[in-house]
Length: 267
Image 1: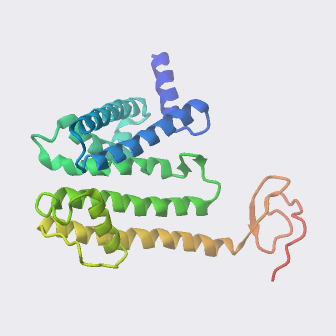
Image 2 (image 1 turned 90 degrees about the vertical axis):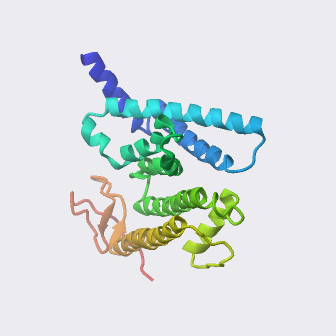
Image 3 (image 1 turned 45 degrees about the vertical axis):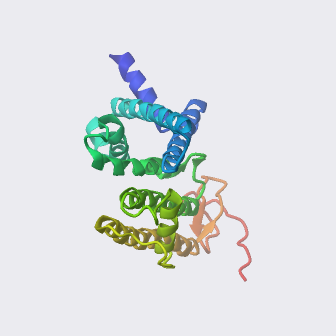
């Protein structure tokens, strides 16, 4: 029993580790496979030669076979399995895997969940990146904003393409057509040369614009608040205790009393 507990603890540590070589390789590999699977899924929306289409399908299925094993191992190694199961990242993983595990021949509506695969990267933006820990809060906020924009564009482009391609192939012929429509809509350019004709496509368009209007400004406000807060602090590392943030007019560390040196000249 202790051996199993040790294996579970070690495995859980590797899944959340960016410091050790094994953790870095594992998480770099998972990140790369997520991005590759997104690229392969986009490629499948184009008219590829039959042999290429077959190989793309095989590789995609192989990647999702790996993701299924990864999901089960994450759940098995989690200290609190019920809490892990209902966590946001775990629910996203499960939603993405459902079309692969259950199949879409019987449950065709599950196809829409395949476009959520990019959201699996959310766990890498919880105070960390694939390159390691964020060095500053501003970097974390900027990275989340860029990821939010990219995720909104990718997910909604896929969903709208999935819905509109069957009934409006002239305008939504490729994934790039859907990306063009989503970007022009979110940016409020609204050229009007591509428009959804189905009720579901129009509903998705409304949800897409509301998502962009709510999420992006909310995250931008966090960056703004951080910038305002930083103006009230002085960034200097204390030689005594290592505290890095002090009051703007502080001459001594408020924790250990060590002198902080000369204050910088203020223009």
